Amino acid sequence: MTSITKVRPLSGFPHLLKFRQQFLSAEVSPFKRGFVFHQGLLSSPGVLPFFRNFILQGFAISRIKTIVTWSPSQRSKKDAMVGPRFEQTDLEVQPNTAAAIELIAEEPIHYVEGRIAVCHGGGGPLGHPQIYINLDRPGSHACGYCTF
Image (tube, rainbow, N blue to C red):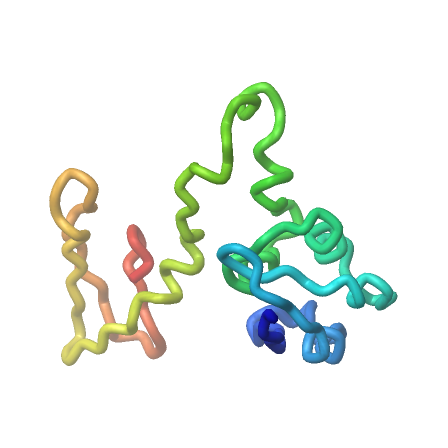
């Protein structure tokens, strides 16, 4: 018997708020590494088309935020990797790295005392030059290279 989990929308995606009630009542069950929506959600008239495709194809997702798009032109990995370049590529065995937007969100905020902050760029051949960030203006400041 599989357990049932409630799915909640992400607060950072305002275009999903009108579907809030449907997401709060949507039930998902564990499937491989992630979750698959139950068939009963298909009958709901307000289900977004890309959710309907995930349900019909039985596509497993690792986190709820991986199926929410942050760009109108963004497509799922399964839809984007089609054509002659990916003919003999098995996507199941390819590395599934997190998107840059998720990696940046995981980085903690660094508080600095003083008027100037320094970003070393991580060093090595993959880093960037050392830069100085002026903190005189109010608000948070990020490195222009690595956004941290």
